[in-house]
Amino acid sequence: METAMSVTFLGTSSGGGPSLSRNCSSLVADVLGDGSLWMVDCAEGTLRQFSRQPYSPDRSQPRVSQISKMFITHMHADHVMGIIPLLRNVLYPPPAGEVAEQVLVDPSPKIEIFGPAGIRTFVRSILKMTLTKTRDNYVVHELLTEQDQITPCDPPEVMHVNEVAGRDIVCSEDGFWRNISRGKGRLSDVAVDAGPILHRGKFMRSIHLIHPCHGFVPDPCLGFVFRECFHPYRKVVVLGDTNDPSAIIPLCVNPSPSLLVHEATEAHISQDIDPKSKRSFETVMGKAQGRGHSIPQMAGTFAKTIGAQKLVLNHIGGRFPAPGPNDRNPVRANVIAEIERQASEAWGMGSARAAWDFMRVAIPVPTETVGDTQASTSQQASCESEFPTPSHTRTIPSKPSSTRRYYHTHTQSPGSSSHHNNSSSNNRNNFNANGQQHRYREGGGRRADRSERQDEYGSRKGRK
Image (cartoon, rainbow, N blue to C red; front, top):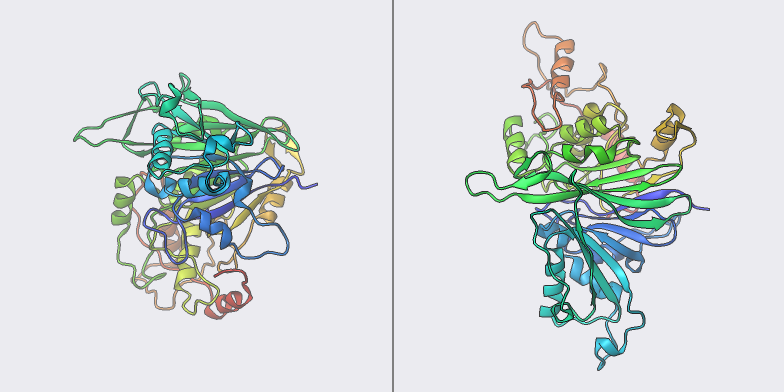
């Protein structure tokens, strides 16, 4: 009996996409093991991604018809513009010449959508404006703060013909939405919690969003937590766009998550890694903070704070395309390896991975537990062995190594030493959860042997 949870990434690009190698944000989680899938975010082109999946003889591919719930982190276009095409496909069109009311097989909703204020109006308006009718029904539940306006479902005339009245879920006093949904898994019931994370704007008392000065309107954003209610207590945390997710920490601990999915839109890449890279660290950090995004070190720091057992980076910036199997130039692979290294060193608990489209992460049942919460050393090793290792990267050490390779063209100033270089490189990871950092000096680049990487490209299959 299959008992492993899994997460499959359908789109891993930031809002600058889609690109040739990445679609924009979407993933599906198999947390119940009953054949249903729960989706987080649904960017433009998500529906097509289901048909673009590479064939794998070892496992079945996710199907769009399996989606039963959708969880939307925020209302930006690169996270919601694929909802309507996907709904039209999942709910099926009515027979030609019939009206929807005459062909409903089951009045209960076939798919549930959870999201912030505005998601109900968004779905309802586009379906109405495009004169779309379907065979099956849907429902939208909005996650509201005390300041949000309720989008009415009464009188029924305001709703779409295939819409079922949804819940208006107001956050509790601590600012969280707990048990917004629940399902029965093979080993345990699985509950869903949601919490606020900072994307753009400011928090008041770390929970409620306010309008900062200069007329800038903040963009609310959510993180979702999928947790088993009983043993083995696995937990998956998926964050939306953020430069400070600290407000959601209470939902992420006790127990710590089996998997954290954290964005890394920006990254500083030295010219030793990519000769075309011209941006300073200060420029990269300023852009990330100004636009409400994170760099790999920030993702690693947050993963360390909550004790995540696995860390996957997503929402990768357009500057960092996914390496392909036929790439002759190793720069792409070196850049992705450097992004992973930066996150891994800040995390200090394993090897982080930068997600690519159609990457699947398995979360097996722990072999041992201690006090029903923290995994033992043998469990963590088992989880790590299950972690997918793409052939475009080498295994990244969890801690800085004194034997790290450098470009032969790297020069040292008179009197300097390799110890100085390693110390300088370590300083790049002095971040807190808010992305604040101490200044550092570049300590040199790092890349894998060229022939080794080309051999790995040759053995890599299933990527386009």
